[in-house]
Length: 330
Image 1 (cartoon, rainbow, N blue to C red):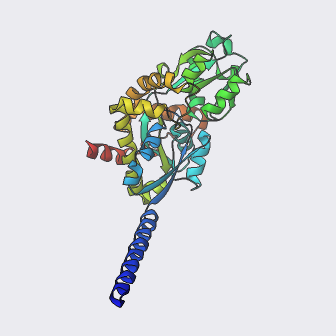
Image 2: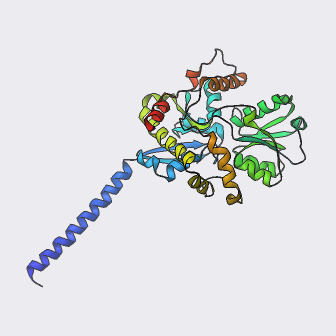
Image 3: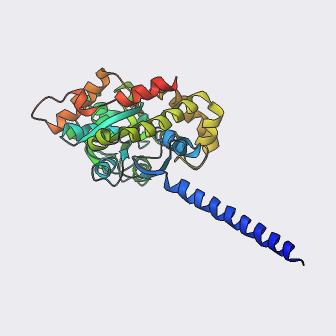
């Protein structure tokens, strides 16, 4: 082989190695440029579905975000956000309760304004009045499930003190307690409410007929809201894009519901369309709710927290960023 040929081969090999190393470096650099975000979810449900869709469809990545979704108890999502273990929490009911109690947290995005809970009970219970002396499982003190339980009881003439309200955790764990007969009833979210009915449990009350409130969304610390508004904007934009996709593309959303992202029971094919047809219309493509709902949620939380001074909506909610994002997406 001539000297010229050898030089040409060395050049080509070196050129190829250089480009391979450059590509690897670019890939690592690109990954390093992603902002890592952790969101605490109260359950794997239809109200948290937009976050899973945003991750699966790459909407978060398009905002240069690497998002980790972590399921924990409702109150723990707020504790984690305040403790800086996560940046956001989806348990908006718990966020309102915490804010009314003085915690430095605000709700910044709403997924829905209608609770996707039904009060599900053991088959032998046929009325709310029969729950006196019985055990009801909820997501914990101050959680939306606990607030809904009290609302439902009062609406049917039963004082909350007449039942035993237990903190049994996220819906899927609460349902296991119901199946094991550790509790007699529980407000369960879709899709578990369908699964429970198919497995013989009784639906007593649709919580949405008793109470309107923000369920699912984003809450964050006042520090992040003040110091990192652009981060809030990017997470909100990806989430709203996911909500709008879910509402616009029924087939995609039903296929997604049938996948591994949500807790949907043993027969996802049978249940997915039912879940979608109930859940999709309630999703808020604009991501915010009016002051009437804000005040009602604050009033409920204030009954327990008993703040020294009246709490105003602007102390608990801040939809200014999501309003701008929503308008820009039109």
